[in-house]
Image 1: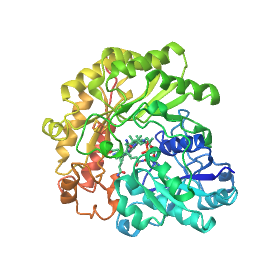
Image 2 (image 1 turned 45 degrees about the horizontal axis):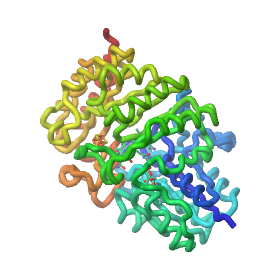
Image 3 (image 1 turned 180 degrees about the vertical axis):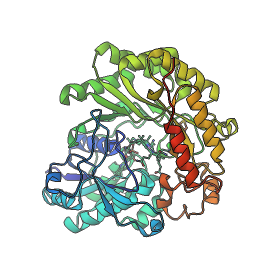
Image 4 (image 1 turned 135 degrees about the vertical axis):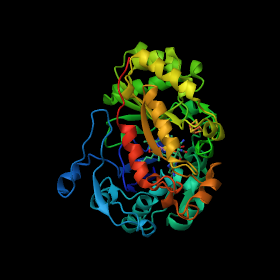
Length: 454
Ligand code: B12
Ligand code: SF4
């Protein structure tokens, strides 16, 4: 008889959260893998903004959703975890209510195993809540926890989560051994880990809310920026065949009428001749009429006139880039992924292709160790002067990154011991020179005065 595995995408517990095309892609890949190995899979998505049971939750305001698959989450104000007690901000549970979650768990066939995913390190309270309720409602069923939080904070996860197993790293790599240990099952199918095209498609059919589909054309990144965890989370840089990526897009489009897709790559544009250029040409050729969104920062350096035109024609609507800082010194110190000259050229290419200033979002890090407010201000002004839109991205320190030691030194919080202090809203590594007041002013400055010129 087939075994049943329950997959859980937990809530976000945070001061703020916005559904910027966010789906549990890693968990859906694992579901595809499990299915291919003959397991029955069922998913409970705690972040489903459109759960039918919300009609009975009259205390919750219906969230504003956008037609492109992004928008607000339903939310409830909750108690702050003790380490955050002094932070003068409201703390929320984003997603379905606890009652709906319990009802979901009690309404399904008892599983043989539960897989729980995790994303940001500082979102672990929502993960722990899910595990606690699973233990109450499904006593005796083993719980496995994986995902980015476990990979980045393995000891914290194994010591505090109450999961039976905590598994760091790529699921496809580690789950076969786990299934052997728990059930004695030998896998029928293991993908070639060096070939992303051998992975089964993510089991997107399990998602209750099919408003958009996330796509991954590659894993990892050839750069090594000091603040980024990409190299810890991925084993090298691997890419899919660009035509197979378009086959996947067309598949979801034909099957469910999906017209919005978001790219989750760390390095979508790198090595463009072999990857993104053929992909864009194929999307245009097939006349799919879809919208594409890149919420994660793209590499400015890779943009040419040709790529800009192809992106525009293919339907790339939301484009975000990572500049991080206009300080030449810091650009070099943190990895040298971009120069200010390249930003100017890129913005001009994108404008020529038809994008407006407000379409060209450029992320700027704020709150890096030792970073002065003037550096962020100058970065904002540079982005504006190039005819693009600056977007402040608050620095979140990540264990294992090259900048980690410096972050630990700079922070008044115990970021080594407590992942809640990695929360980007805290600006936990800012120097005294960059006050919250200044940060708010910088946010305002970034938001105002982006004009469409030329
Ligand atoms: C896409 C993305 C986003 C998207 C959202 C997508 C999402 N689902 O959340 C957007 C652009 C919105 C986003 C925003 C931010 N992000 Co982000 N994001 C990513 C990114 C690039 C990919 C995540 C992903 O889906 N990968 C693809 C899937 C296939 O992989 P996966 O989820 O890891 O799953 C695999 C394994 O983890 C494992 N696995 C997963 N679940 C399970 C479960 C079990 C049981 C097992 C065994 C295994 C397992 O197997 C899976 C398959 O191989 C990661 C970097 C990265 N390469 O992972 C950063 C990353 C997670 N983000 C990060 C950051 C800093 C942010 C921001 C704070 C940036 C900012 N300053 O504004 C914001 C915060 C958003 C918020 N609301 O607070 C950091 C993490 C910070 C932290 N402390 O945890 C990362 C690591 C990037 C970095 N800088 O290094 N992000
Ligand atoms: S280029 Fe982007 S994904 Fe690559 S290491 Fe730097 S920040 Fe990370």
